Image 1 (cartoon, helix red, strand yellow):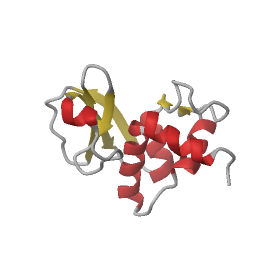
Image 2 (cartoon, rainbow, N blue to C red; image 1 turned 60 degrees about the vertical axis):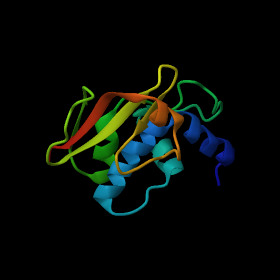
Image 3 (spheres, helix red, strand yellow; image 1 turned 45 degrees about the vertical axis):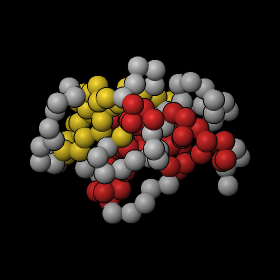
Image 4 (cartoon, one colour; image 1 turned 30 degrees about the horizontal axis):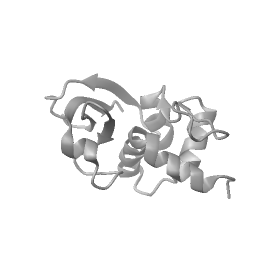
Length: 137
């Protein structure tokens, strides 16, 4: 068991909604549940995300630098990532994560996976962008 595991899972709730959405896409492809702690540590080691395990309140924790590479690693398939406008409609072999903003906070959510129950940012905000992940091969 990792020291600070409870703090780690609390930090997921504060900062990791985008990371969890990416893991959800990966789970759809591989067909099994992915442990967020293991995935985060591996992605940190590969420098796909920033994660300060010594300070889980670091405001930059879960900052993603290599979006598609996370999916490449976990699924064994090649992915492309792009940011699109709020009106974007998904095409075949694409997965879309919505970025919501209520003017104060942002939250990443998708139509079929909600990492945070009853998100106030989703309820009171609007979609300001969409993050598109496309299977290349």
